[in-house]
Image 1: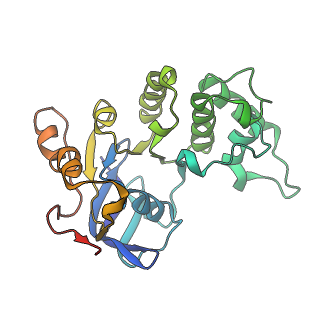
Image 2: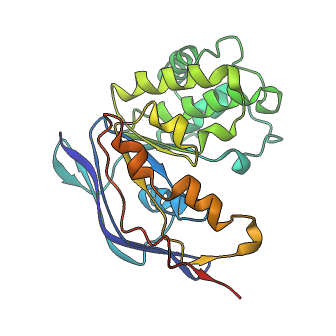
Length: 259
């Protein structure tokens, strides 16, 4: 399997605070990588570095296409729910088409071929008949699938989903994972989640990101909770047949509590 993303000794800072350091990670063609770790552990920061939405403060980030180094990789991104403005007056079709924004003609219009592609994606997502519906009128699961359509319409090498389970819509959860399994036959998927259980059913590999240098005890994350949920993802995995990779080192006992 060829690697598509290779990260070496990556570090990144957020709000002037170092969140990640010495991160090593390789993502392969048609990989299904689950990234877990506590809130504030740097999961979203890592994703933003991979997507080029955030500068790294050290290390290397390399991309490959068919095993050959390239400076750019097409990636689809399904952001966290709370970053979506549902009042924004945009329809399902417009959301899906926006995944092709770099393909607009000079007049700023999409060509018929693009609309055709959007229609295929909308049908694949099970949203036919809702093309003109504004996103504010969709259920959580429908919005999630519209955004997933936007993430795959450009035929990316990798699709990155940040906490997809926050689009609470239990009836579509199973369908979402079916869609992801289909998409994964063609391209790599990186799924960020704090919900290990959900992730485990689907992933081919796992990384645990926990490189926050600063815990604020008032966030309600107790040491006990961390211990219970994130101390040993490796052990949880050891019992299954899931190959796994663990990111960086685990410094579970050396968090600096701010006084």
